[in-house]
Length: 101
Image 1 (cartoon, one colour):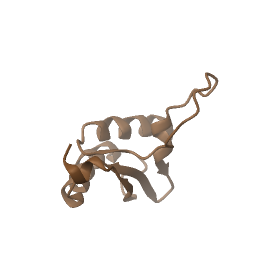
Image 2 (cartoon, helix red, strand yellow):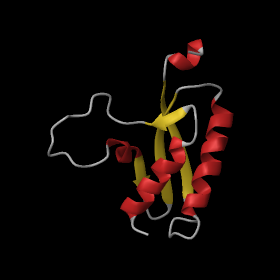
Image 3 (cartoon, helix red, strand yellow):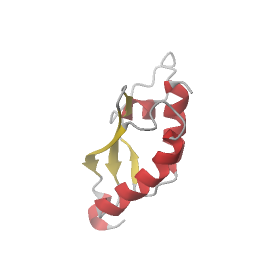
Image 4 (cartoon, one colour):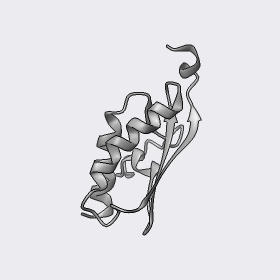
């Protein structure tokens, strides 16, 4: 599996985790020549680590990160990143997380 394919599968797995979303640029350019998926910018695949930057839209964080880990680890199984360190980095907390709306 290529890094691009894995990135897509990781994003799909994260889409099923309510309360977290990929951390992407706040106002991505809308130019038609930019073909890539902006959510993919939240994922870094290194030789020994998988880093995913996230924005929390709900609290508390520990159960959200646990659910994200449970969704992501099976996607990594059987790939060259299977034994990589998984780093989930919450870069921001959406204001709605504090109000529960």
